[in-house]
Length: 189
Image 1 (cartoon, rainbow, N blue to C red):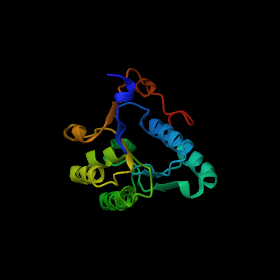
Image 2 (cartoon, rainbow, N blue to C red):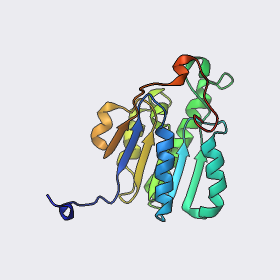
Image 3 (cartoon, rainbow, N blue to C red):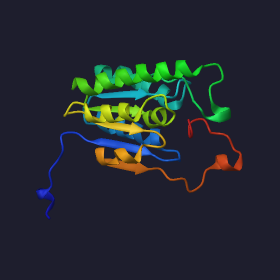
């Protein structure tokens, strides 16, 4: 088959999942690529509420891209993650935040206003029980036919793989955390 015989979809669903680092970084790269092509992007985070490098970066570029870039940080922190879990936030607050964030993500993906909607850590919110698998399925199936969707986070449900176009599993070969080293600012967060 020759290259000219290939077709192009109007929109696709991309998933970055797996146990290792790189899922959010990959989605930031996708955001940069889309913005560089003049696309409108909505970047929505489900878990991270503390200030991380991507927040600082996005806030700095927002004035450059004006209404071409929408950013929303809706998480309340780690949930059901042992010692890493947020200590002062109850389960109901986590769930309420996830539902509110999903509502915003759904509105942006349905509207047709954005070429790309990125839902960072959405898979985590589903895996942790803050949202249901049907919520994830709904955002995939109900998006505008012209809006691509990117979903990141650990534990993307295998039964939904048939609903996506590209899925990448970030597999850990080695991580310094296993040797009891904490995350490095500017590299890990």
